Length: 114
Image 1 (cartoon, helix red, strand yellow):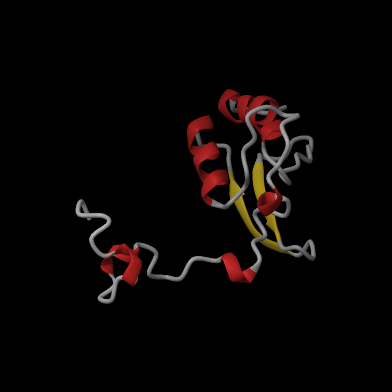
Image 2 (image 1 turned 90 degrees about the vertical axis):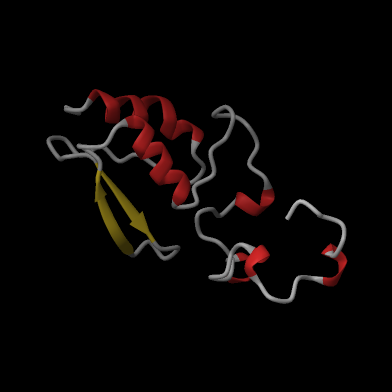
C-alpha cells in the first residue's frame, strides 16, 4: 500500500538498521515519521510520502537515531536510548568551540591549523 518506492525502500532496508526506530504499518495511511518522547507522548509527525530515501535517512540521523552497520550489529552503550539523549550530553548552542574567545588551555599550540 506504500505509494512511494523510495519510502518503501527505506522501510524495508533502512529501518532495521536504526536503533529504537519502529515501523507501524497503517493500511491506506500516508507514511509518516511520528516522534515520541520517552514517555511515548507524540511530539511531532513528519510526512514522508514526498521525500526520497536519502532525505529520510538524513532526517532520521539528524534526529539522533543511531544507524547500525548491520541489523544485528551491537549498539554502543551511549546510543542505547537514542535519540533520547541524557541532558548532560546535549551540545551547547555554541557547538563549534573554535568560535569561543577563550580556547581551552591545552589546545594552545597543539593545533596550528585551526
